[in-house]
Length: 154
Image (cartoon, rainbow, N blue to C red; front, side):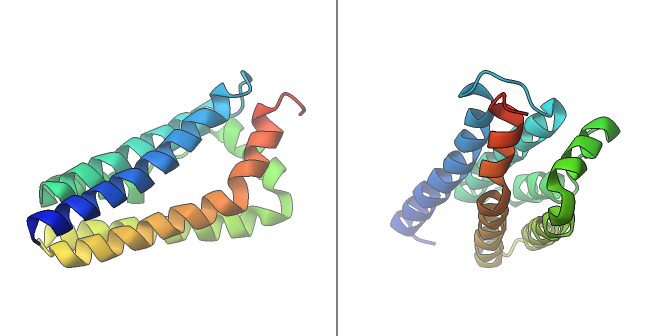
């Protein structure tokens, strides 16, 4: 990868990662109400891991990419009480949410595998897929989560 391609790619990936992470952070702060706290914190950590991956890709630090992608793939679950709240809210959309979660897991695992093998181009392609999977889930659920859990109307 030449210097300019790497800079463009890094800038683009960093922008996507910050857009995802920043909008997750705004969900709790913009309304001043508390929703499922551990879930919110987990999303914050996933956003930070995504930002770390962007930086590691820019520096071709494949071991760090693999480590942070592995964290995303095997992210912790919220405590049982929060899972009950989330399941009650999701109702008939639980299966769709689980499919999105699985797709993110699989995409992050692919990033980790390619990084472990030192296959930079494949890492970048797999990371783009991971970003798309995150966006699909956010598009399907984020606004509803915010309105229900963080607007003070529940």
